[in-house]
Image (cartoon, rainbow, N blue to C red; front, top):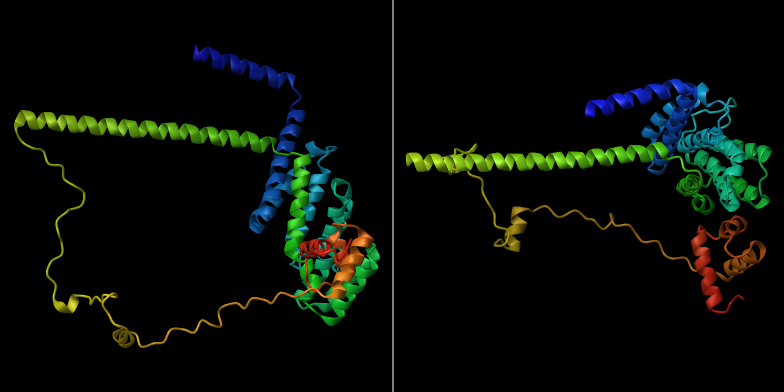
Length: 370
């Protein structure tokens, strides 16, 4: 009966191969593979696994150039992966993606990001990433000690993007003063850029799921684990049965012969603590019985001074009246909740958007603002 089923399946498979257009099947399978690699690249980006990202990116690039994908709707995914690659290598200024050697990875990423504007539903998120790419293009150059490259990056953005006047003025001041750890740069850090890009990826994958092959492979792996677990249980039951049979045979043999059969163990249980001369024995000191005076004689060295190792907690900066007024002006100008925009217009000494939101709540609670 089983043989008949296999023969029927084979016949149906031959019929499908003859009646279905194989190039179309190839295109569908290739698109599934491309989707799986796209999801893998997003996962490697989230987990900050640069080696795995580069390895998968090479395969993704080869599959994306398949002739069966011509005219498909996967161009946006290719652009997103190109954008992610430039962000991953954003701090490697010697990596070149453009013919113009002045264009560094994050600058090239900003160029691609402008082409992905229609894929971002949240316009404020799009603007935040644009600003972060600009700020970090300058900050990375200053971090590497390349002030001329920072000035060149700022000039390139002025020529190719519309920059807010306040943002341009702040970055020009930072470049002139060579302040690598300026509070403004710390507010728009590289880690914040990675987190914001991850938010974009999560939103894109939620609206454009690309996990068909991933789900199918997950089902297969779970099925294999389940079957493996059943086989392990059967093996344990079989081994326990064999042990029980052996013990019963031993009992029968001892009853028939009147002799007890001794099972030898792999390792001997005899005490092997033989006599050793005093010169070979190690001295043992009981910590509970030794006095402080004796302890100082046993270990005369002083413990290391760890006072300098402890990190000093930074003092919390108080909000000034001028900063409260700046915050109030920013809310009136841009609206409640636009903390990132307000940070661009005023200097809050390295405070984040969350700190601005908390301060605004305090001002409202104390009736200092309406």
